Image (tube, rainbow, N blue to C red; front, side):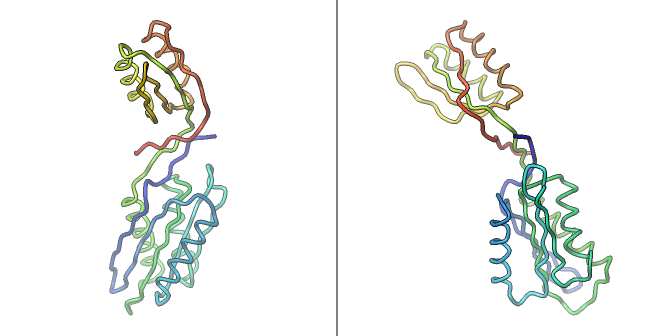
Amino acid sequence: MRDYKTVQKEAEIEIVINKSRFIGRCFPVGDEGEALAVLAGIRKRHWDASHNCFAYRIGETGAAARFSDDGEPGGTAGKPIMDVLLGKDIVNVMIVVTRYFGGVLLGAGGLVRAYSRAAAEACGAAGLAAVRAGVALSMTVDYSRYGVVEGLLRERGQITDTEFGENVTLRAMVRAQDAADVIAAVVDKTDGRCTPSRTGEAYMRERL
């Protein structure tokens, strides 16, 4: 597992440049199958568009990557969209920019600027998120220590579940690199009465 950046949510924007409509859409995607399904849906919805250009990067390192000009002059659409993904260093993301030609030729430079802008604005609307390698912790504390332990976990990680009974059981996610320090801090705050146990590994998502 390794840390990476992606987008928070699906987003859509629209810009008009010299009478051509550019609809930029950004999607979080988990694999190439999902990305291609998204593309198929857009092509079906916008069957009458002049072009549906796209780029995606998938995997922690963006190992699965593809882009397409979809009939625009080579290098004027798909690559500028991909450059936005590379520039922001985000993965598990797909951007599709749909163009409805307005009758005015933009030239190669104009197309590059238009597709770059639509892609960047779609990314901006989607928002960025950091996805970090995390460790799941579980611990049980008495009510007198609950408040201080909860505060520590909220400051250093994300509480995922709380069960109230004779004592309080807390489950949380913390960054893998912080797990040892958090465990030690809980032990210290509870005077050695509670030692959190590691229950697994998973990714954590944080808004940027």
